[in-house]
Length: 230
Image 1 (cartoon, rainbow, N blue to C red):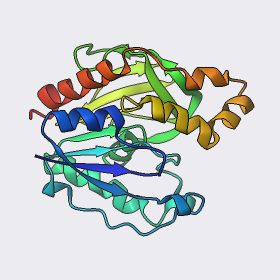
Image 2 (spheres, rainbow, N blue to C red):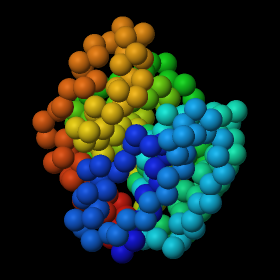
Image 3 (cartoon, helix red, strand yellow):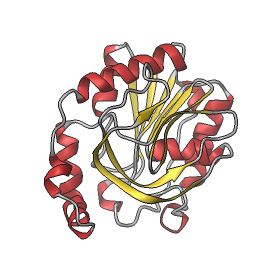
């Protein structure tokens, strides 16, 4: 089985999610959207593969929003088209943060700035605990989405929906993939300054929460069994 992994920036990777998929027999095919040297000018040209060539698509987070067309207008149209095609073709998608915004926006939902940001470790209120545990999960976002028509919300927080299922696909606003390396890299890549500007405890962004790998494994397993039906 083949898994398409979409990385949007150089400091993010599939982490625990990618590792669990590999343990479950999925061979990764990785697409890097914005290379490091273009991080501050991300209007690159990208040739996305067809999702129908894969058994599952994993779309990771990004430091941009789907409505940031001034910054990423060269590729956001194709980015939105990919999960829409996958869902319509019944190819399972696991969308994480930005990767959950994209199918929501493409299939009739909305994405907008959230009334409150979420950074660091936060629990969620899960409607389906066997699919989405309460966490805590690592959060790093300033946006919220609405569940696209035909989907169902499976978790939320005071800032809005945290997860939804649409057909054989799952979108989550939090980051189950983060490893200790990720928790160090994001603050190093400007997160510390952001936290200080927001009056947050920098140490909280760098804290390693016990059980992260186990929660990620359980989420991937439940996604494959109960949502993707693989």
